Amino acid sequence: MTHTPASSAPLIDPFGRAVTYLRVSVTDRCDFRCNYCMSESMTFLPKGDLLSLEELDRVCSAFVTRGVRKLRLTGGEPLVRRGIMTLIRSLSRHLETGALDELTLTTNGSQLAKYAQELADSGIKRINVSLDTLNADKFREITRWGDFNKVMAGIDAAQAAGLKVKLNAVALAGFNEDEIVPMIQFAHGRGMDITFIEVMPLGEIETQRADQYLPLTRVRAMLMDHMTLEESSHSTGGPARYFTARETGGRIGFITPLTHNFCESCNRVRLTCTGTLYMCLGQEDAADLRKPLRESESDGPLLAAIDRAIGLKPKGHDFVIDRSTRKPAVGRHMSLTGG
Ligand code: SAM
Ligand code: SF4
Image (cartoon, rainbow, N blue to C red; front, side):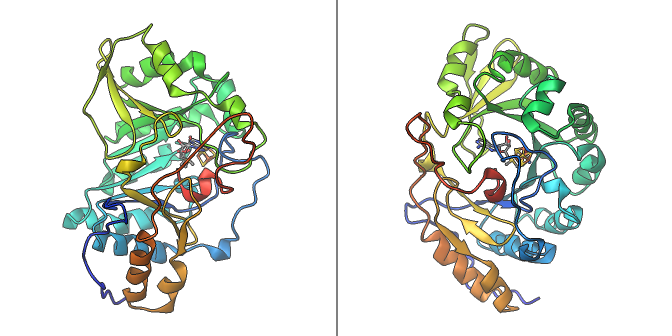
């Protein structure tokens, strides 16, 4: 494979934001069907449309050439993509050279018991595990297919392998509102940070978004009755705003795409498993990278396509969830673009 970078200049979008973070949905498939993420009967992309592991590596590496410092593999469930460890081991060469600061992933935890040690051995230091409840029955209800005990075993294995684990929980009205405090206690008791996320109107699902939506302003107000939250300067380069709970010493993050738009500091773009680059989670602006990738052995056309795409990055999303807005902001599910 010949690498002939058109330029190694950083990627700067029309609003002066440097793009230094690439999230890659390595598969749109998943072994769960979380009811806020997917519909029960999802149509997945034909397997033949997927970028191969080598192609995913090439696109990621092209972004690294252009100044991307952080790569997150996500999905769908990244650990159900066949051969995923081959891709991870290969991408970890960029950690060794210092070109990349961090290689990480977001996972539902179902396969972690199997992969945790290998992930740690491949230079991964931190992972995000999604967990919306501590109750095994409710876990089955929200994920439709998931096994709570497997995820717990996955978290155990990850911590035993030395991976730093952060929990991600989507705040869901009438579902986990009463578990926010126990979840924080659980996370902090095990040395994990926990981040709450507002549900976003992405893709058609069976439930009304307005019925699921729990504003984090409400969660924070409720938390004030239980603990003392001190604003923290901690940042992982993402949209979460962190607080430290004085009682536990642990951190709580809030990702608030609805109640507080954070687009002015957006530093990321998202690649799907078929090579479509989305410049914003909440907008349709996209560029096809698969064609330039396949059209030449040299990376020239790919790098030129990345440049053109970054030039189209929109200012931000405009998510709304209310009773009068029945359509999702965009038709694609989170599992396609990568959460
Ligand atoms: N399967 C992996 C997992 O669940 O961690 C990775 C992909 S999943 C799409 C990434 C994150 O997006 C998860 O934390 C999930 O809870 C969150 N998510 C999915 N759909 C969402 C939505 N409509 N609004 C907000 N977060 C969502
Ligand atoms: Fe799968 Fe993650 Fe979506 Fe749940 S949130 S269905 S685990 S992709």
